[in-house]
Length: 150
Image 1 (cartoon, rainbow, N blue to C red):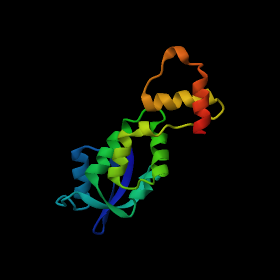
Image 2: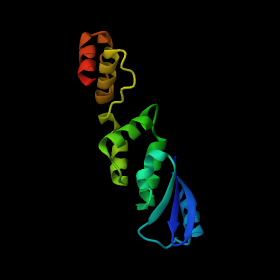
Image 3: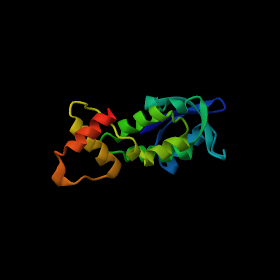
Image 4: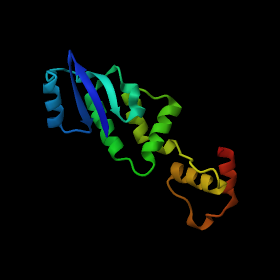
């Protein structure tokens, strides 16, 4: 979920993303921006998540924010953490970049535990390739790959 405070003229309102068209229209009516096209409004504050503070104090396309919110709601497991770390690594700060990143998380493996080099190698290959042979889980090549990655 993304929560922003948007501003139009002297009016402000908070809006959570993803949202329905009805919720978006109600928010736009509250700040008298229902006729604004393209749907780009000023973000006065990023309430949540703080990692998206790159959207603050700039004009953003609310349809793109809504799409990003839907993508982020579909994250599973550590993908949200992986998203934020990749975002920082690549210095992504535009909505098109963030949306593109949400579709390419497999290019950014997240290594959290460096205690087992074999596990690091297996997790990396699992992230990048999507599968591993079940019969070679203890193969030393995974530990070697893990050491190379670290």
